[in-house]
Image (cartoon, rainbow, N blue to C red):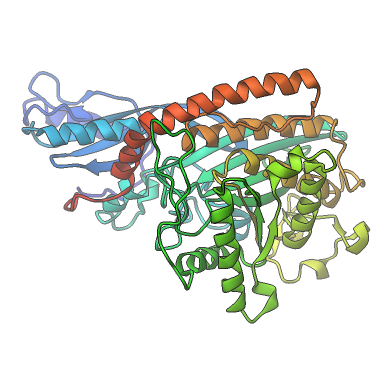
Length: 545
């Protein structure tokens, strides 16, 4: 492969193709069904129209090029279009046909199991692998793309890595777009006399990725199963879609970072939880929290929603091990500011107890969390101080932050989020999604104050903006649950607690349980093998160059 570093106009591209076409009218090279075929009867023949390159992959025979052949715009962030992949095509790249073995066909089949038209997203001009805060603070003077992208969330990282070795003056992402896996939901609302754009992004980590019962706990490197970064973005676009004030709030979810497993079984809908490895120094747990500290700074807040008591202990076993791990790690940290701040809330018990209200408990935890980590705001007008009082945000308040230029061309000092709330239940799906919604509402209430849009510290649960947020979190929760658990979420965020709604909800939960059980027992192994083929270079593939 030889890289052409020149950037061509559309007219120059057409001239180049015409020249290659004319030069190959009398030439025939093999009979490969590649992206462009060459022969005596027609020179260059367009085979497929593509909107982006996902990457290259090789199993045992030739390389394959995966192309985005159909896309759909699902939203925008600051005027930068966000797209979902609707269809892809994988074509072989070689000088001639080869004899493919049975194993080659199996790997091709497994690769195609990962359906890139389901919940994969990209942008030509916005780095979806990074948070809004990271993109803002990176600097606006660098040309796009500002490499390197965060490979933790770039699901085509492996597919593009070899190709980068063939390039010299350019990076791989000037040829191929980074693709994230997860969910993207966006809504526009006109509340409080403003035009507000609200977006939710869920970024699934490509490390230790897999399906429910086949990926539990942590790896030796501290990577956890179902690791998802969740970002809530609020944009006041009253002035224009690409300017105005931006706010964001980051949360993460992930499996309990200890060594534990659950073996799926056709005959056992709820397999027992096994602590399958002794780790007296909690090395994997320590590596996991060190990684979170690097990614988000401190404080690291932990909201543990697993059951605290059971007649037949399942969740309790791994929950106790988790607390022991946190205590052990905290005892090795001298600086109190960097200790893990652990909070346990038995969601199941609290939601069923007559004298307890799980919503109230979650609201208290959410306020505690948002007050400690803060959130990002590109150009704050106000700040919330102790006691819930509001004061003007001054330049002095932003002295430690990076200096930006706001939409009026004057210096602005952003408010930054430092630290993150990490939430988990056993699957990090249903209970976790409800808890993250609660934290999202609290962050939204405070962001609207800081942006100068409203002055009340709490949002009315029946307000339009909360109802829109509920629908968005339901969509996000269902997407993540389908990817990891094989069905939509059991527990839905809802403001309706009538008896009829609760009865309908129980029937839906039963159907969801059946779908999730079927997926875990019969289809997860195929999905897991497919992810392994896509993400891991297990075959000693030689260079593409």
